[in-house]
Image (cartoon, rainbow, N blue to C red):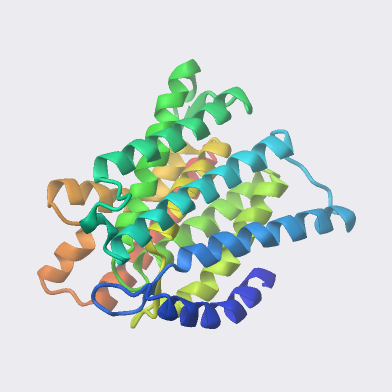
Length: 301
């Protein structure tokens, strides 16, 4: 609630600032850059609230050294956000056309791979995570092979969520359902730092979603898309629920795969065949709820 209220207060003047800075989408439907506000607010609020929770006598528990776990979470959250913000600036102000410090797609993927690999290395060496829990098959010890797997998962979700942020309320609504599922799993796992982080993220996202549903006034942009997708993957990896992550975030995976098969994300293809934006968004939300329920069940096996 604290995060929701503060984001709700900050977002209207933030939208005005983005309009003044000309962070306007090419179709002139709203502004881009909402992800920057959420990344900043959630990070600052966590810095303020987590020590306060400790002083209030709340028992703090975690499966990992708290400082190392938080370093990984916020490294991913902020670094992918900065990369996305850079890309937003390059595209919105036409620097890519002029060649002014513009990153080509392959260069951006290389930077993503480096950031994702650093995160995977930290997970492996600092937190000693190297297992894959497969329902009905048990725990698989991957050793150093965990690093390329985690890198691939983080990159996939970063690009999948970023790709989904092309329709009013679509990516944020589906992400909200995913985060609610993982918040429940983090509470069950008694990972206090992670559950507080996800709770702050949820509150801020709800306030943002109010202005992102049709007709959207503000969009996440690459800053939010890359940061949120990569961090969602890290949350699943920290909880050791990789299979549940793939199921709960299944719609993002479908969007990514469809862009490779159809040369366009699924939501764009559905628009072409005649579905309205509202119909696509609501169907996606409902599908996300079903996948989240199924994923939570799988996570318990």
